Image (cartoon, rainbow, N blue to C red; front, side, top):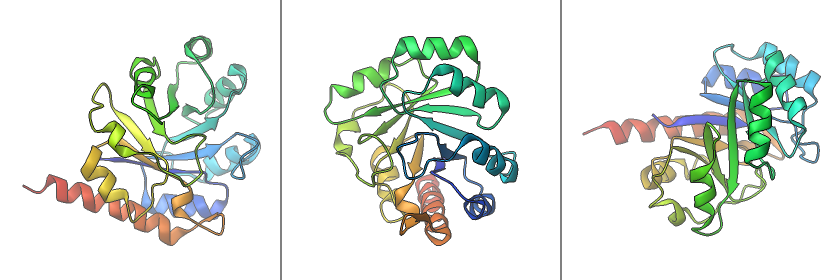
Length: 208
């Protein structure tokens, strides 16, 4: 079954919608330049409201490893999702501070970009068009022969193309943010449509 991550949650009502849908993951953005940024204390309050069975990923861009580890160890988040220039040395430094799960995002613009993703020591890789949250996709054809490891697909996903992504690529998971928003805010209706689209596509894939 394709994992579902609803990213960029910022408000209690976003959490209520997620709790009703029970995605596999949600995401809080800790990159201060993002319009979806949430301060650590707000994220902690949102985590308290979130179904405890839903892991929360924290999205970071070149943050000090100590800051990332602190939020992991406090339980504000369960996964560190690294979206900047973090290299293998950074991942090693973070692992010295915490044993929690680490995801690393990679910008995919050419076939050669996949080599770094394949070699990453992160627990899971996320393949995106760039900085994340832009609503823009990349050429999925680049991934058709990528079978080196499971990955989460991101970039330009929405309720209308989720099924096509699953049929074409069979990724480990789909990560959506702007595709479930209206006027810059999470839209419960679009969240529900996205989750339903993924689950229906999985059901059809499983039907002989």
